[in-house]
Every structure is written in structure tokens, then in C-alpha cells.
Image (cartoon, rainbow, N blue to C red):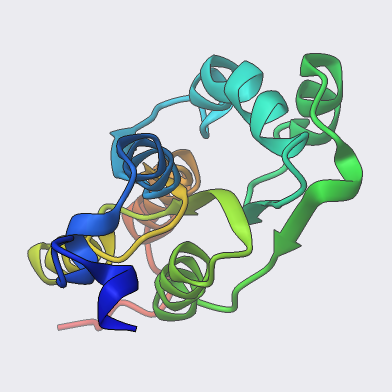
Length: 170
């Protein structure tokens, strides 16, 4: 056995082929966070061509808590294989980020897109830690439902500004 190894380096990290290292770097993803005012329509449109390419590699394109923005038609028009799209509906923000973390590190996804509220510093830190071991492209679309919150606040303000019938008489 010693004769077969000869004078070659014994550390396995030195045996990697540069082409293999490039393919590993390509698989490892990064997480991009974008803020939106269109519920993510524009952002999804911008990455749809890349998603189409990734969907033909046989791994999942994971959409987590997408709003009803016509994403199915948008992705189909871009050429995304719809049988490779995995839709996840989370019950809250904590579950949304947990699902994103798991999808990014699982190795079965090529892209993970998540719609959520504005992330605080703790959640941003969690995503940066996950990014080190991510095996997929990650996109967080923040403030996707801000129009709903603005509408709800304006309705409650209008409700409280009305004269109350039960005012106390002094």
C-alpha cells in the first residue's frame, strides 16, 4: 500500500480537483434579503429566469408563504418546471424562517424563496449563520404584506376616531 501512495500528500483536503471545488462553490448558496412594495412580484420576475434554469437540474424550488400574486403563472411563463416547485404554507413568522433554514441546508433544494415581515437583528443573524452551510440560493422578500398592515391600521384608527355613544356624562 505504501508503494501505491508514494510521495503524494496524505491530507485528503489536498486531493480535491479545482473543477470539483468550483462545482461545490456553485452549489453553496447565498441568502439575499430584499425589501418590497409589490408583494414580491417584481423580485420574483427578476429571478424567474434563473429559477427556470435551476428547476431543470432536478432539485426543488421552494416557495415559503407566498402571497397571492400570480406566482404560478409568472414562473410557468419563465419556463420553470412546475413539478419541481414545492409550496410551503407556514402558520407564523417563526415557522417561516425555520422552514427556510431547513430547506437551505437540506441539500434537496436549489432555490428557496421566503416571504416574511421585516426581519429583526436576531433573525438576520440566524440567516447569516445558516448561510455558511446553505446548499441552495436563498431569497428573503421582506415586508411583503405591509399593505395589509397599513390598511388594518387605517381602519382601526378610523374606528376609534368615531364619536363613541357611551361617553360619560359629567
